[in-house]
Amino acid sequence: MTQQQELYGRNDGIIERQVDGDIFLIDDRRGRIHALDQMGGGIWRLLEQPQPVQDIVAVFLAAFPGRKPRELRRMVERFLNQLELDGLAARLS
Image (tube, rainbow, N blue to C red; front, top):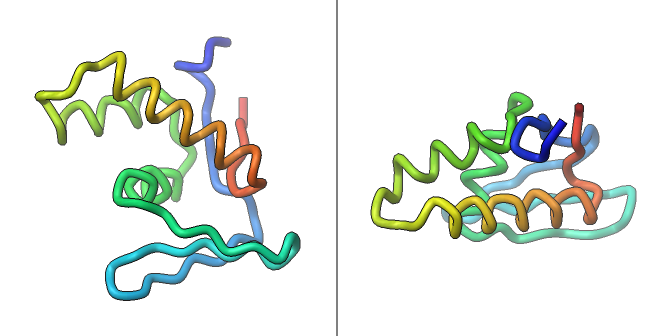
């Protein structure tokens, strides 16, 4: 299965807090707080239900039609990889 088809979802135990429109993720197990930018917050919201990478990219392509598809795909994949490294989300394939 390619990364485009892999499902990503949130890991259990991550607490989400919104403060003045900003999203913060709290990982009590690791004692870390993560602040998300607007794109990261959008991806996090999409991951409320497991999503394939291609569907996440499609949402951002629709929201930002002037952006290059390859560039948006790289940004989404990079963020998903970081969420996985930080223990906030996982590949569910």
